[in-house]
Amino acid sequence: MNICKKTRYIEVDLDYPEPEAISEAAAVIRNGGTVAFPTETVYGLGANGLDPVAVEGIYAAKGRPRRNPLILHVASIEQARLLVKVWTPLAERLAASFWPGPLTLILPRAAVVPEIVTAGLDNVALRMPAHPVALALIERSGVPIAAPSANASGRPSPTLAEHVRADLDSLIDLVLDGGPAVVGVESTILALNGECPLLLRPGGVTREALERVVGTVRLHETARPGAAVGDAELDGGAAPCPGTMFRHYAPRAEALVVTGDSGDQIDKVRDYLTAHPDRRVALLATVEAAPVYLRMMRGDAAWAVPAAPIHMEVVGSRSRPEDVASNIFGALRNCDQAGAEVILMEAIPLSGLGLAVMNRLYRAAANRTI
Ligand code: TXA
Ligand code: MG
Image (cartoon, rainbow, N blue to C red; front, side, top):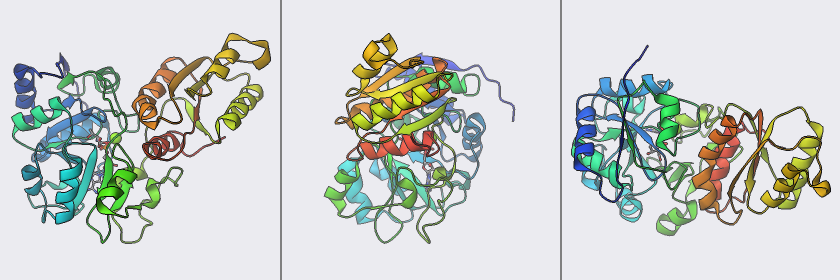
């Protein structure tokens, strides 16, 4: 489908989202249009989740495969209850603990949920975002808002309105610009339709935090960093997360995960630069290793390499995965803009938000490592 729209951009104040801006965006939603809006995780591309034609507009703008279902965003637990067959005690406990926030719950869907939202599945994904603009927009629209991340399908998720513009300008109706999305990785997706809560996608709520509330949470095979892409249907009988079957978060450059501790990583990066002097290499570096890379880039004799990295993004400390999470998607886009052919991305430990970070980096790299 060919779309050509005049996309409007409105800046909103986070502490006090202007009622006019929200009303205007809500009117677009109610009229069947598409609105990109900030959430605490990443920007979403929203449409009326009860209107199949409006939802069609999301798939078209993103170029998203129709087999990949959407999350319905709600402004209250009461609104969530109307969208599922049974709102279970477990769902209630999780929502009470983590909503509003970066947790998406998967439950058997109610008949009011259009098929296009769930891509024909019997389950629906629900989340109440912890962002004043998102909540105000859902409340004002009076309908659940279907919203994937507001990037072109396959690209890194947008954490700034500028990223949305780069991917979707002239394809959507409106962008509410609320500044940077602070968490930086998408919500954790937890399936509650099986016997035991099953984590389908690690995200803004850590597995450790979930387990403190509900006990053991199993990790779906495809949620593990480095799991093969395309095997989402292997976990016999368990709810698959269709999105995990598709190439994701991909920068234009070839991305490679650099494994090991900080010392190993520095050695591997130096070896790579030495072996590939003809390539334009950018780095996603931790605070720990960045000073060494800076010396390479400055041509320090002790760290001489035949061709220095052309660009470096310092994403945070290995011991502060929440900082790394908030920076990775923007950093990947910046490396592309700097003209990188290859992006070497330092791995961080898997605890806390590190699991979500590494899940995204492995996907961006299509599991390639050095
Ligand atoms: O933080 C987030 O979750 C962001 C913000 C905008 O809320 N949204 C987001 O949506 O990341 P999206 O579409 O980029 O990723 C949603 C994932 C997809 O992998 C999709 O396959 C999966 O959720 N999903 C949606 N509905 C599902 C369902 N009924 N069963 C299983 N997986 C589902
Ligand atoms: Mg997405």
